[in-house]
Image 1 (cartoon, rainbow, N blue to C red):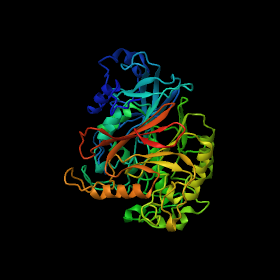
Image 2: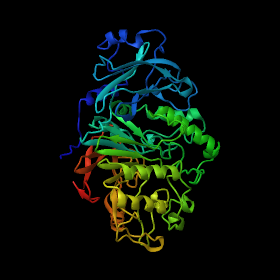
Image 3: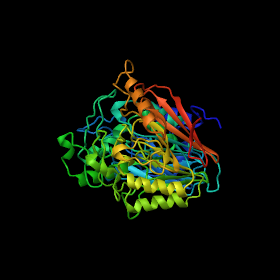
Length: 553
């Protein structure tokens, strides 16, 4: 089937309206006025003059609903460490009205409820919308006394017996200071079932860039961590994406601290302020701010669990594991240098933890969906960087080789149509997964990269939205020498026969479309230094059902 570079649907109208300063699409004096007098927001007691500078989100869609989110701000407070503009740095508690409708003008609502805003959760509101129809588009808005949120749109998951194609958007690694979010403007205009963030939605620290210098580096208080989300969502393009699609966020590491493990910091401390408070206290605050500012439900009895699966008709079952909070410490001191590390393949070392790994393997092997799609924060396929078999990084699955072998061997034997979409690396890749992580012909040497004997699936690695990749070379749009990055691409392709695509220069996002016969993945490229950047499809690859073989589309 053809895959257009950009599919502009009726939601583009909503996107444009949302981007214009976050104003409500249907104010109380327009089409929504009769509804306002009939719905719960006609009564007394709503928050007066609320500000909705963080926009709206619909998270973790289901066949019957989603978690709807907003934040009520009260303007910039004195003493804020970061200028948050329209997002506000103080918040309030109280009640809002929520309207959900199948109509763009929000008439004939299917939900009209009062929603509690939590003052002790940074003014955020989470509402579990239920009772909706599968595979349908819904519009929603939060309303106070004298203020309304932008109108959001989301689609519920397709019904259980659906054989329709599924389209999913993917992004990762969006350091705020390092670039603009044109990628999100174009994601907003895509026709999608939902969007997945593969991690690193916010950064504890980023490099100085076109948007200035990070003034809230290595936050040490709960409010400073909340300020990260408030700051990132001052961006109109990011808010537009959220108001256009249902959203599934994954947690990786920069939401807390680069390359951490369950046991503590593993990456070298580069600033004294990083360790000003203890590991456990900082982790607790990072988790709290993430759950406050993400549209996700909590698991009863397991309040920090994020791993979950979503079934999208008969076509897709999406698995979203957590590769960070249960992992053992990285091998060999987690050096970023390309080294040979004997600990990388030691049996018993885990990235998933025993309970999650069992959940993951059981889910993959028992799912009867056509495609088993894994939203994977860290690269699974091997990445050899030198002739003696040296691997790139110990923080990826290259540093947890025994567990990787277990998962991929199980997949090779018992799972048809395994497809991983991965974040974190900042560069773009596509490759074939073998049962050891390495295709026949991969250099072995001292690292002992055992060649695989059976195909297990395919993997696409999404480039960063803005965070620096191999080819950036600087922060001006002219005069950047990318020859070194292009040479490294050629070297990686030569040393990794399972690797079929390499792009260490482009930034952007990815679009996965799957049907009963094939899956296609399109790499969309934007200029992160240009807030008005266009978008182009830099590469599209396909895999036929039942093959685990990548081809150019």
